Amino acid sequence: MIIGKSKRELEKMRASGRLVGLVLSHLRTLVQPGVTTMEIDRIAEKMIRDAGALPTFKGYNGFPYSICASVNEQIVHGFPSNYTLKEGDIFSIDCGVTLEGFVGDTATTVPVGKVDEDKLKLVRVTEECLERAIQQCRVGNHLGDIGWAVQQHAEANGYSVVRDYVGHGIGRRMHEDPQIPNYGKPGLGPKIKAGYVFAVEPMVNQGTHFTKVLADGWTVVTLDGKPSAHAEHTIAITEDGPEVLTLVSSTAQLEPAVI
Image (cartoon, rainbow, N blue to C red; front, side, top):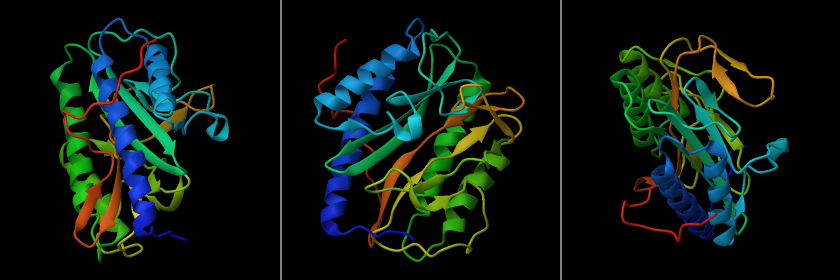
Protein backbone atom coordinates (compact mmCIF):
# COMPACT_ATOMS: atom_id res chain seq x y z
CA MET A 1 0.00 0.00 0.00
CA ILE A 2 1.33 3.43 -0.96
CA ILE A 3 1.28 5.73 2.06
CA GLY A 4 0.36 9.35 1.36
CA LYS A 5 1.89 12.00 3.62
CA SER A 6 0.00 14.74 5.47
CA LYS A 7 1.12 18.38 5.36
CA ARG A 8 2.71 17.96 8.79
CA GLU A 9 4.53 14.82 7.70
CA LEU A 10 5.75 16.53 4.53
CA GLU A 11 7.22 19.32 6.66
CA LYS A 12 9.22 16.74 8.60
CA MET A 13 10.32 15.11 5.36
CA ARG A 14 11.48 18.48 4.06
CA ALA A 15 13.72 18.75 7.12
CA SER A 16 15.20 15.27 6.77
CA GLY A 17 15.62 15.76 3.03
CA ARG A 18 17.38 19.07 3.47
CA LEU A 19 19.72 17.60 6.07
CA VAL A 20 20.81 14.64 3.96
CA GLY A 21 21.15 16.94 0.96
CA LEU A 22 23.50 19.18 2.93
CA VAL A 23 25.52 16.21 4.16
CA LEU A 24 25.93 14.83 0.65
CA SER A 25 26.84 18.25 -0.69
CA HIS A 26 29.69 18.46 1.82
CA LEU A 27 30.83 14.89 1.17
CA ARG A 28 31.18 15.71 -2.53
CA THR A 29 33.79 18.34 -1.67
CA LEU A 30 35.93 15.71 0.10
CA VAL A 31 36.23 13.43 -2.91
CA GLN A 32 39.76 13.57 -4.30
CA PRO A 33 42.65 11.21 -5.01
CA GLY A 34 44.24 9.92 -1.79
CA VAL A 35 41.08 9.95 0.36
CA THR A 36 39.72 6.63 1.61
CA THR A 37 36.05 5.80 1.38
CA MET A 38 36.08 4.98 5.10
CA GLU A 39 37.17 8.53 5.91
CA ILE A 40 34.15 9.86 4.06
CA ASP A 41 31.87 7.43 5.91
CA ARG A 42 33.17 8.62 9.29
CA ILE A 43 32.66 12.25 8.42
CA ALA A 44 29.14 11.52 7.17
CA GLU A 45 28.19 9.78 10.40
CA LYS A 46 29.56 12.58 12.57
CA MET A 47 27.75 15.26 10.57
CA ILE A 48 24.47 13.37 10.78
CA ARG A 49 24.69 12.71 14.51
CA ASP A 50 25.88 16.25 15.28
CA ALA A 51 22.72 17.50 13.54
CA GLY A 52 20.56 15.44 15.90
CA ALA A 53 19.71 12.76 13.35
CA LEU A 54 20.54 9.10 12.83
CA PRO A 55 22.40 7.51 9.89
CA THR A 56 19.55 5.44 8.45
CA PHE A 57 21.76 2.94 6.68
CA LYS A 58 23.79 1.95 9.74
CA GLY A 59 22.34 -1.30 11.06
CA TYR A 60 19.66 -1.46 8.35
CA ASN A 61 19.21 -5.20 7.80
CA GLY A 62 22.71 -5.53 9.20
CA PHE A 63 24.43 -2.99 6.92
CA PRO A 64 27.43 -1.84 8.99
CA TYR A 65 28.12 1.69 7.69
CA SER A 66 26.54 5.15 7.39
CA ILE A 67 26.97 5.51 3.62
CA CYS A 68 27.09 3.18 0.68
CA ALA A 69 30.42 3.73 -1.07
CA SER A 70 30.52 2.27 -4.58
CA VAL A 71 33.50 2.75 -6.91
CA ASN A 72 33.63 2.23 -10.69
CA GLU A 73 31.94 -1.13 -11.49
CA GLN A 74 30.26 -1.20 -8.06
CA ILE A 75 26.64 -0.20 -8.61
CA VAL A 76 25.17 0.16 -5.12
CA HIS A 77 25.58 -0.97 -1.49
CA GLY A 78 29.37 -0.82 -1.52
CA PHE A 79 31.17 -0.98 1.83
CA PRO A 80 33.33 1.95 2.89
CA SER A 81 36.87 0.65 3.37
CA ASN A 82 40.54 1.56 3.35
CA TYR A 83 40.36 1.75 -0.45
CA THR A 84 42.11 4.95 -1.51
CA LEU A 85 40.31 6.86 -4.24
CA LYS A 86 42.41 7.16 -7.38
CA GLU A 87 42.58 9.63 -10.25
CA GLY A 88 40.08 8.51 -12.86
CA ASP A 89 37.69 6.68 -10.51
CA ILE A 90 34.01 7.47 -10.28
CA PHE A 91 32.63 7.24 -6.75
CA SER A 92 28.96 6.81 -5.87
CA ILE A 93 27.91 8.01 -2.42
CA ASP A 94 24.46 6.99 -1.18
CA CYS A 95 23.34 8.47 2.14
CA GLY A 96 20.22 8.39 4.31
CA VAL A 97 19.25 10.20 7.50
CA THR A 98 16.39 9.78 9.93
CA LEU A 99 15.32 13.04 11.58
CA GLU A 100 12.35 13.15 13.95
CA GLY A 101 11.16 9.80 12.63
CA PHE A 102 11.29 10.56 8.90
CA VAL A 103 13.88 9.49 6.32
CA GLY A 104 15.68 11.41 3.59
CA ASP A 105 17.66 9.46 0.99
CA THR A 106 19.94 10.76 -1.76
CA ALA A 107 22.89 9.65 -3.89
CA THR A 108 25.35 11.04 -6.39
CA THR A 109 28.31 9.82 -8.44
CA VAL A 110 31.42 11.98 -8.23
CA PRO A 111 34.40 11.95 -10.62
CA VAL A 112 37.72 11.62 -8.78
CA GLY A 113 40.29 14.03 -10.16
CA LYS A 114 40.68 13.91 -13.94
CA VAL A 115 38.27 11.33 -15.37
CA ASP A 116 38.03 10.11 -18.96
CA GLU A 117 35.21 11.36 -21.16
CA ASP A 118 33.47 7.96 -21.29
CA LYS A 119 32.96 7.93 -17.53
CA LEU A 120 32.04 11.61 -17.41
CA LYS A 121 29.35 11.02 -20.02
CA LEU A 122 27.98 8.06 -18.02
CA VAL A 123 27.70 10.25 -14.91
CA ARG A 124 26.12 13.11 -16.88
CA VAL A 125 23.54 10.89 -18.57
CA THR A 126 22.64 9.27 -15.24
CA GLU A 127 21.96 12.73 -13.76
CA GLU A 128 19.88 13.59 -16.84
CA CYS A 129 17.91 10.36 -16.35
CA LEU A 130 17.12 11.44 -12.80
CA GLU A 131 16.02 14.90 -13.95
CA ARG A 132 13.73 13.37 -16.56
CA ALA A 133 12.30 10.94 -14.01
CA ILE A 134 11.58 13.77 -11.58
CA GLN A 135 9.57 15.58 -14.25
CA GLN A 136 7.29 12.53 -14.46
CA CYS A 137 6.55 12.67 -10.71
CA ARG A 138 3.27 14.50 -11.25
CA VAL A 139 -0.30 13.99 -10.11
CA GLY A 140 -2.17 11.85 -12.64
CA ASN A 141 0.91 10.24 -14.17
CA HIS A 142 1.75 6.57 -13.65
CA LEU A 143 4.77 4.80 -12.16
CA GLY A 144 5.56 3.43 -15.60
CA ASP A 145 6.13 6.99 -16.81
CA ILE A 146 9.00 7.38 -14.34
CA GLY A 147 10.72 4.15 -15.36
CA TRP A 148 10.27 4.87 -19.04
CA ALA A 149 11.83 8.33 -18.68
CA VAL A 150 14.98 6.72 -17.25
CA GLN A 151 15.10 3.78 -19.63
CA GLN A 152 14.60 5.62 -22.89
CA HIS A 153 17.24 8.27 -22.13
CA ALA A 154 19.82 5.76 -20.90
CA GLU A 155 19.30 3.40 -23.82
CA ALA A 156 19.31 6.26 -26.33
CA ASN A 157 22.85 6.97 -25.13
CA GLY A 158 23.95 3.34 -25.48
CA TYR A 159 23.68 2.40 -21.79
CA SER A 160 21.62 -0.12 -19.85
CA VAL A 161 19.54 0.35 -16.71
CA VAL A 162 19.83 -1.95 -13.72
CA ARG A 163 16.72 -4.09 -13.31
CA ASP A 164 17.56 -5.98 -10.12
CA TYR A 165 17.39 -2.89 -7.88
CA VAL A 166 14.78 -0.14 -7.87
CA GLY A 167 13.67 3.15 -6.38
CA HIS A 168 11.01 3.15 -3.68
CA GLY A 169 8.47 5.00 -1.61
CA ILE A 170 9.90 6.62 1.50
CA GLY A 171 8.63 8.12 4.76
CA ARG A 172 8.82 6.79 8.29
CA ARG A 173 10.71 3.85 6.78
CA MET A 174 13.43 4.03 4.17
CA HIS A 175 11.73 1.49 1.92
CA GLU A 176 7.98 1.83 1.51
CA ASP A 177 5.65 0.95 -1.33
CA PRO A 178 5.79 1.32 -4.25
CA GLN A 179 8.83 -0.14 -5.91
CA ILE A 180 9.93 2.20 -8.71
CA PRO A 181 11.86 0.42 -11.49
CA ASN A 182 14.14 2.32 -13.84
CA TYR A 183 12.38 0.79 -16.82
CA GLY A 184 8.75 0.56 -17.82
CA LYS A 185 6.01 1.62 -20.20
CA PRO A 186 4.21 4.96 -20.13
CA GLY A 187 0.69 4.88 -18.70
CA LEU A 188 1.17 1.64 -16.80
CA GLY A 189 1.35 1.02 -13.07
CA PRO A 190 -0.34 2.81 -10.15
CA LYS A 191 -1.47 6.38 -10.65
CA ILE A 192 0.59 9.02 -8.88
CA LYS A 193 -1.23 11.10 -6.26
CA ALA A 194 -0.46 14.22 -4.25
CA GLY A 195 1.16 13.38 -0.91
CA TYR A 196 3.20 10.48 -2.22
CA VAL A 197 6.95 10.68 -1.60
CA PHE A 198 9.36 8.72 -3.79
CA ALA A 199 13.08 8.01 -3.74
CA VAL A 200 13.89 7.82 -7.44
CA GLU A 201 17.34 6.44 -8.23
CA PRO A 202 18.58 5.65 -11.72
CA MET A 203 21.41 3.10 -11.80
CA VAL A 204 22.95 3.19 -15.26
CA ASN A 205 25.62 0.83 -16.60
CA GLN A 206 28.12 1.36 -19.39
CA GLY A 207 27.70 -2.28 -20.44
CA THR A 208 25.24 -5.03 -19.55
CA HIS A 209 22.40 -4.53 -17.07
CA PHE A 210 23.20 -7.87 -15.40
CA THR A 211 24.60 -7.71 -11.87
CA LYS A 212 26.14 -9.88 -9.17
CA VAL A 213 26.65 -9.53 -5.42
CA LEU A 214 30.12 -9.84 -3.93
CA ALA A 215 31.11 -12.15 -1.08
CA ASP A 216 30.32 -9.47 1.54
CA GLY A 217 26.64 -10.09 0.77
CA TRP A 218 25.99 -6.42 -0.04
CA THR A 219 28.18 -4.89 -2.73
CA VAL A 220 26.47 -5.07 -6.13
CA VAL A 221 28.71 -4.93 -9.22
CA THR A 222 28.21 -5.06 -12.96
CA LEU A 223 28.54 -8.59 -14.30
CA ASP A 224 30.91 -7.44 -17.07
CA GLY A 225 33.05 -5.21 -14.82
CA LYS A 226 32.19 -2.02 -16.70
CA PRO A 227 31.48 1.23 -14.81
CA SER A 228 28.13 2.16 -13.34
CA ALA A 229 26.71 5.46 -12.09
CA HIS A 230 23.96 6.16 -9.56
CA ALA A 231 21.93 9.29 -8.76
CA GLU A 232 19.01 9.69 -6.35
CA HIS A 233 16.67 12.29 -4.90
CA THR A 234 13.73 12.15 -2.52
CA ILE A 235 10.74 13.77 -4.21
CA ALA A 236 7.36 14.83 -2.83
CA ILE A 237 4.40 14.82 -5.19
CA THR A 238 2.40 18.04 -4.84
CA GLU A 239 -0.52 19.54 -6.76
CA ASP A 240 1.97 22.06 -8.12
CA GLY A 241 4.40 19.43 -9.38
CA PRO A 242 7.40 17.53 -8.03
CA GLU A 243 9.23 18.99 -5.01
CA VAL A 244 12.79 17.67 -4.67
CA LEU A 245 13.32 17.45 -0.91
CA THR A 246 17.02 16.54 -1.07
CA LEU A 247 18.07 19.28 -3.49
CA VAL A 248 20.01 22.05 -1.74
CA SER A 249 21.47 25.24 -3.16
CA SER A 250 25.20 25.42 -3.75
CA THR A 251 25.44 28.14 -1.09
CA ALA A 252 23.61 26.22 1.65
CA GLN A 253 25.94 24.90 4.32
CA LEU A 254 25.91 22.57 7.28
CA GLU A 255 28.70 22.85 9.81
CA PRO A 256 31.20 20.24 8.59
CA ALA A 257 32.39 17.56 10.95
CA VAL A 258 36.08 17.27 11.72
CA ILE A 259 37.62 13.88 12.42
